Amino acid sequence: MRVRLQSEWRGFLRGCARLNPQTATVLILYGVFVLVHFRLGGRGFFLTHVAPDASGLLSWVWWFAVQGVTGFLLPALVLCVVFRQRPAAVGLGLGDWRLALIICALYIPLVIVGTWFLSDSAEFQASYPHLRDATLSWRVFVLYHGAFLMYWLGWEYLWRGFVLFGTAHTFGLHALFIQAVPFALLHVHKPLPELVLSMVGGLALGVLVWRCRSFWIAVPIHAVQMLVLDLWCTLRVRNDIDGIGLEALGRLLRGMHGG
Image 1: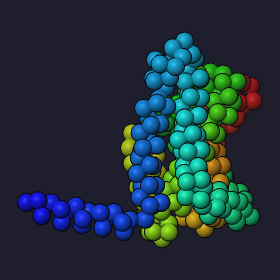
Image 2: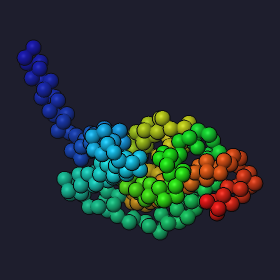
Image 3: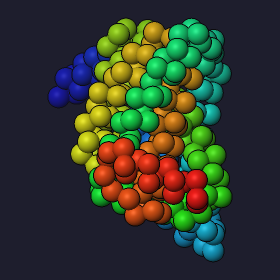
Image 4: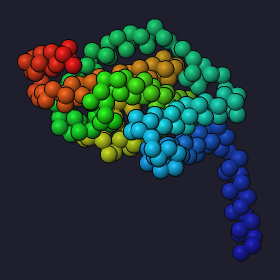
């Protein structure tokens, strides 16, 4: 028995020695960062243990800020400081910024149209904006989305930077799927159309970032997508407008001008 256990232990050590340290670290830490964000970055944790008398807006700012730390700051330090990677090699450079700007310019009109249709759903109107106070106050709406940028930095770099470029030297193009699957799974409680879109969108964003060699392109794409969806839903709720035709759009835009 002792000889058998010693043999298994030596085999285990040989297997560990064949692992790429950076890839193994990334695949372990991304799960740790997600768990830390959900446990310590949760709004319930903030209101219970950090600032019991804080407003709903501040609880969301906490959620966004912790995502920025666990998704962007810490992963970037791991790759650039611990593993001494060049920022450009792990998606932090500008990359092909000209192509990125062209893609943004082509994508934003599609977002405006697509979210207009999605916002007509009662399920989406009940879910967006996540901070319900943002539907009642434009000041809160602006502050909420300004803070949201911290979230998008963390959310996008975790998947399209840390996981994608942090494992690419081991998995090559297969890293595109490795970053897309957990990204989609974290949308499991979202409205069904959003869940389906996340499965396609996670892979598409990964391909775009891979081509541009920079994760930055994903930040405005996701941020504008959420901003426009929240805006449509807010205007519909504030003005009690349903429908997807030009007449409904006209009434909604007039309500925006008057609001």
